[in-house]
Image 1 (spheres, rainbow, N blue to C red):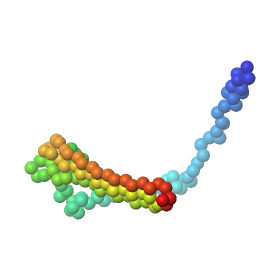
Image 2 (cartoon, helix red, strand yellow):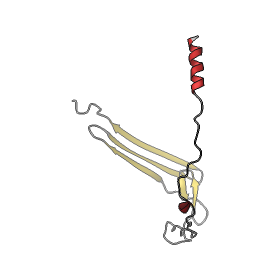
Image 3 (cartoon, rainbow, N blue to C red):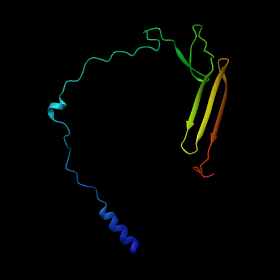
Image 4 (cartoon, rainbow, N blue to C red):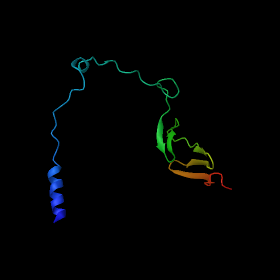
Length: 122
């Protein structure tokens, strides 16, 4: 019985708050300020010369350059990771992805971690 009484009291207390209405956050002068009409200049291409950017397509190892004959560039892609710590953390890692043909890939990754979480206890 106490649970029902407590639930009824909580339901009666959980009424929505009465709002005062919209609150203006800007003045009328700020709301009517002129907006810039000129578009920003276009970004430069990766080579720095507009119109000469080499096309890119998604290949088996991610984005790859497209050769002039229409095939994907099959150069290996990779990453190197490093980590360091204070009082006992080391990290070393690397990954490489070599496209094989136009649709396949071979991926190899290596990682090493060293703990020593005793913080100087030997």
